[in-house]
Length: 358
Image 1 (tube, rainbow, N blue to C red):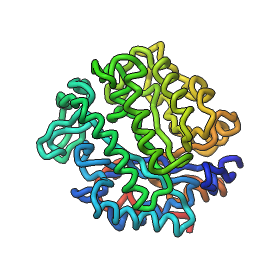
Image 2 (image 1 turned 30 degrees about the vertical axis):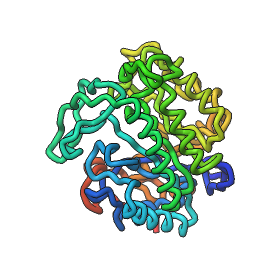
Image 3 (image 1 turned 180 degrees about the horizontal axis):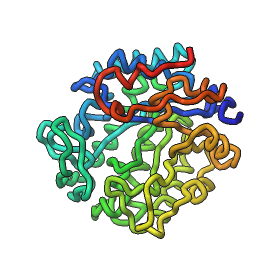
């Protein structure tokens, strides 16, 4: 089975092509510290060829959702060391996904401070989860030019902290409507400075961050996640194919570990010019490793790998409920069903208590 074959990313040898996708679970303390249960959660899943951590806030400003972890204080770094050590002891590899939520947040989660964004444009037609229930999105504060440059540097500092914490690499969360994605699309970015306007300018934020991360982790230890055909969180662009064609070609010039592509997971009937076949549209533009993400099971993942356009597959909800997912693939054993009510927040129920084959 190709899914279970070993593969190398740079100098890292992965035991299989199964990737644990980054998934927010909202189990951190209020101060952004991961817990002993988080150590258990990741070590249970260390048979994945690669684990990509849940999204991790690069700063206090980056926070958008409650009970999400950070990597910007000494205590947070020390807490993550326990996670990476536990994964390594099991023979696993783990990348950290770095996160700035931008406008995808709410002031009630941020001590009354408004979220920030490229432009003062709020998300319409959706609500955000807060400790007091679902709330309408607010109009974010537009970032000043120097603030944008400071955030780019903060990604570099967060990467240094992640290296100290023992992570094997780093992934930029450039997908699903968070701050890097907000800079990319012209529906959210109306800036008139060097980070807005043309496609080249709108991609500058992402590309500058990638260079910051490369300066810390080095060649083939940095990846990026993109969602070219997902309009969620107001990610509307007038010409996404031109935008992502340019961006991926520029990313291909960098010595990256991989490109992590999300498939088109939402209906695009009202967006007829948007590419529905994400891999068919963009995979030939990138000549390094590609990870595909988007509702795969064992059979569909194996078929995708055999098509030859991508090298690894990431699994989300299947990994929530099946810590031993690789073994279940190997033995063709049925899966545990995930309890979606316990996906976000709560205690160990639905977090570290799913049964394994042992």
